[in-house]
Length: 246
Image (cartoon, rainbow, N blue to C red):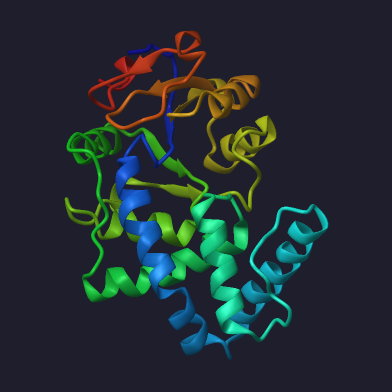
């Protein structure tokens, strides 16, 4: 637990902080892999899908130049090759902006059909509601697209949690391991960096937040990956509780 006097905002990661890693890697990613080709077939004529395909094709060319051995993709309109490349990226959990955008659109269909429900840890709904009630701004910063973030919280196993969240940020704002990203977020939510607390399960992200002047707290949740420098940060193990928010 940590105490940050005068803090007014809390910024939350999703994977390993509000949501189990297993839900992302064992439910969301497989759903996206299974439906990627169908999405391109159904939406290939839309400008949004076309922009994503263009960005993915450029990324594929870069991977080839860097000799990363991606699946073969010779022409942009080859849907089988495009789908294979997307699955290859997902299997590597690459923080690719076009992949994250594509996943969000695929997951939207799953949430709308009821096939998907956003999983959150049991203590999260209570914490979000309490912080919101006490006037603290709550924001999300995740490598998943803003669309994917909103879908997860709007369709969670605990109901619609979006009324308790005031802002969402993804890597279109900047990388999660770049301190400038946290400065931009502090400005966007109207809370000075020293008045903001960021909670994540990855210490490289916490280091970036700390470099921006943000209070950094390590999330210790079941299934999270061990962090070599975990002892450098205050830790939350069982609940999203930060003492100044009580």
